[in-house]
Image 1: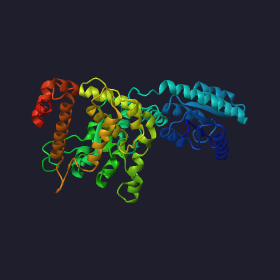
Image 2: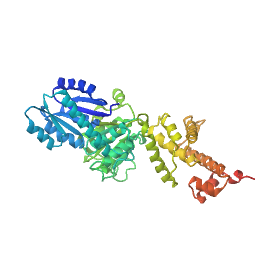
Image 3: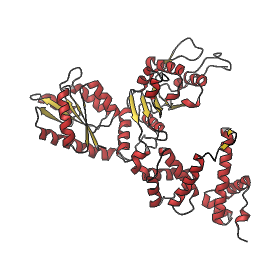
Image 4: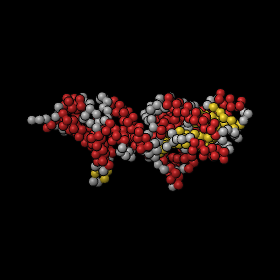
Length: 466
């Protein structure tokens, strides 16, 4: 993977195509993209992190001097080198005043251009080291030092100040909702409540009334007017989580919101204007849904003004130690116990296993390892124990029954009861039935532990030596 990205913008397509071939060879670890249209260039800058832009001053439609402030608005720290025809020094100087890093006159010698590009890329690297820390103000628990995460942080920072709709795509467990929350936190709308809608959790008739609201008498049970979530999100952002699961009739009404910036509550004969930024997520193949006619093409293009892809954990395994440290602090704070480190062997074990559930699965493994670990640090053996328990879940042993799947609340209660019994038995074994020691080891009060023992029927006496 390239370490840095360069974008060349010039309306002379064949010239920049030749530049792309030469510079891709001359600039090591730099990916070179080209664009001959200013409107497309802005979209490319929104969808990908670029370290350096080589921009021509003279272009039709929107020239370089007009495009420069738009680029800097999207990414204030980006390095821009202007290309100008010989004799237009005044324009080049004007571009420097507007924030360009430097300029070069056409026709230029290739060694001179390469030297200038090296200088701009070096300056970008230095700025990135200062500005892209593992944790960013406004980023909602997003962590990482790897290149994919740094690019993600940069994209979020670039997109957040705009009002563009953003479609966040990625595998389950990669933090798509955290990305959406971060975009909101860094946007001018950050002081208003961020509204989240879990689309698959609501049946069609409820989803429509929840999103758009209803008037009294609109349907049986509508005893009073109710504001919809779009009205609740007025002046703010709304996240449509797993947008691919929205039924076609609701998609149609959602399209009107995007096109007209207004909603019509159920039972109403007039529209209500709303000012809402729409963020959406999906882990599904929307292009396939377009072919299957289960997702509207016009809605797709409205939602997909800007796309962000969240990296799978497989792509950022070098960030696992950083993430583990964060999850340790988080989990131990929740349990009100002192932080417990993971041994180097345990970290290596985590870095070399598969993560189909991505970061969410890593978080769960860290939590379970901290619960079951009885040493001063989490060991590879603790990870093995967690993985063994995980396999039981995958085999359905924890919640399946012979006649089918039991109700959620019933299954949850039984699994929690089983976990509590196994956990306190483990505590009793480790402490020889000493309740005071077990409570301390488990991060519980003595009274709380005694309640759990009574509820689970675990007798401390049978763990004490005669």
